[in-house]
Length: 196
Image (cartoon, rainbow, N blue to C red; front, side, top):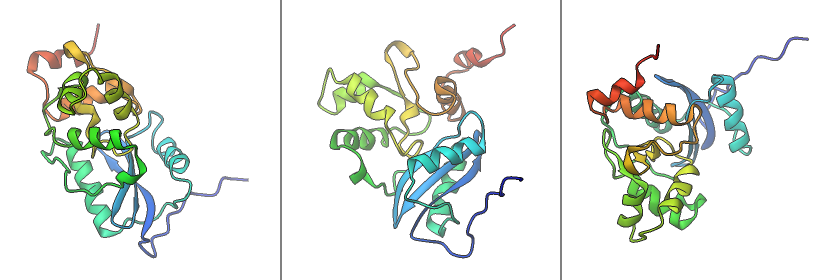
């Protein structure tokens, strides 16, 4: 018996739900409750079906449905960012009551890093008044439910090293997102050239 095709309820725009949307780097997911963004999912390596499955695991209480106009506007801005738009997305309201207080502080600071700029985990810790907490900053960013609205891809390890990235594709996706934003000098972009 063939699998039932996946359908989306487009008859109404509920106050909460999740949806997938295409971007330059693959299908992303977005989840909302009322006027708040509760999560974004960057593309999974295996494509749209895997991204959908990840959204279902992350938000089992939400149903896939059509986006309300405000959420559709957020998704369009995320898609534009992933094509190189210079949008910091700082006005998108986040459901920060779902994250620990330290993480919320890290996310607020990360949101102040403009597209095309980077900061290190150590610099973030110092700016938070928590010198020596670079590892804790990294852990908070590793649990970021709002990427790229909270742009954890803009935070690097010391000495220009990439650092971790929990989205599909790992550090390669992180570097691709930074490249799209123009965060590197032209000689650094040679790192992305095909190898012989």
